[in-house]
Amino acid sequence: MPALPIRCTSGLLAAATIVAVLAGCGSTQPKSAATAADFKHALAGAPPALAALYGAPGRVLDGGPSAFKRQIAKLRGHPVVVNKWASWCGPCRFEFPFFQKQVTKRGKSVAFLAVDGEDSKDGAHSFLAKYPVPYPSFFDPKSKVATVLTRLSSSTGLPNHRNSSATTRVSGTCLTSSLGNRAERKVAIFSSMSNNCL
Image 1: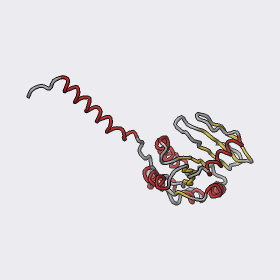
Image 2: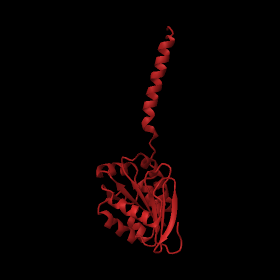
Image 3: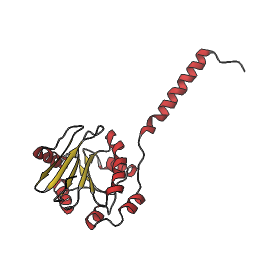
Image 4: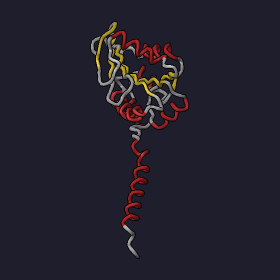
């Protein structure tokens, strides 16, 4: 068999490299870190308020700010982590496995909630099918629930910019806000515990 000319070999090598790179483009998406079975096992025996919260995984709830505030009130006595996300948000795909791991590790003592902002319900359901979580997400297409979080951060001095965090106490409630390197949105922790801020 005759040898291929160097130019042809180089061209084939370049084409093979491009195909390999393009084939790998989708492989950078993180994989889900937990399943419904993982959550069920990890959260068994959670206190009643947390068990009720985690009772129907992957729910996308309506009701706006008033429903969100009612849910927070039901969790009095438990720290609450609120993650604002959207199905179109690239960093969210990378953060959800972290939240999946944290809820399996800490879900019996810390409540987790989410706010699905400026998204479609179909997009939210598809995203949650790929990255399931045991806690509900409040559907927030016009950022009204997010405004509640923003008001809390501005009225309490919590930071609302990247790479920062702070904790403060307001009427006996600990409020913590932090933004990670990849996060373009706020993660807030609310705690009704009287003595300790997280």
